[in-house]
Length: 288
Image (cartoon, rainbow, N blue to C red; front, top):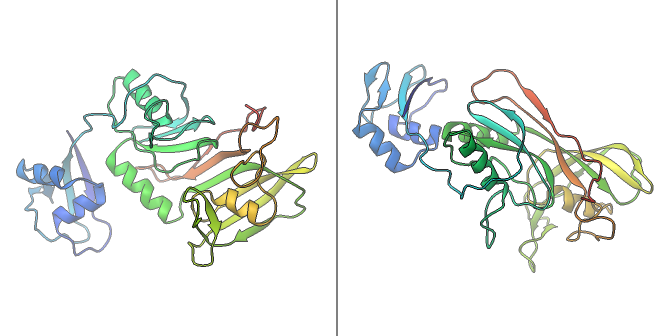
């Protein structure tokens, strides 16, 4: 357990128990244990779970610590781009899932992150804040604690985490632009996404970086975060991502889609200043 102090900075009508549960993404079981063992205080006094909170109240909590990693621990290659007490950013290699899913229970990035934590003799449940497709490489953000994960989830939903991608697309694009087209689930293949007037709004900005033969290297900024967003939008405007077998074609020498999460800009949990994490595209982009 670890004692921490927080000031309620926003107006609220929640009780202490509801505020703590929502603010720190705790389970009902954790909440019950904390109040039963008197591990929640308001303004230095042990608090009743139904006490009403108000702006300016000072919460002192003994938060439960993680007891396991949430996934199997495996040794594997990890490239750390940034780390502090609450945050980890790593470079995901292509051909790898972020987290176990379906029949894939091992050799995912989360398994290797668990192995990285274990090697350092610390226990943190593995908490990816966002995802990348299996064949997309680049920056992935993890929250080491429940409160950090909740903070980053809120920041992402509020659009305060900038995610920049680098991609190689078919054909020449001569000017910067933006694709604004809603995305929905393909009615036939539910693992695909399509442009759908009744789907979720989706906006992708793109900037021309240069050319490789008849193809264009682009910088993408996500204004929303829909599944396969960049890939669907580029197919929609007639310039699919090179090597994208689902939304275009894949021909030799390309072995995967040429899409890489190259930058993350965010204010780390517990800090005041934004940082930018960069991860350069490899020499054999899409041909690994």
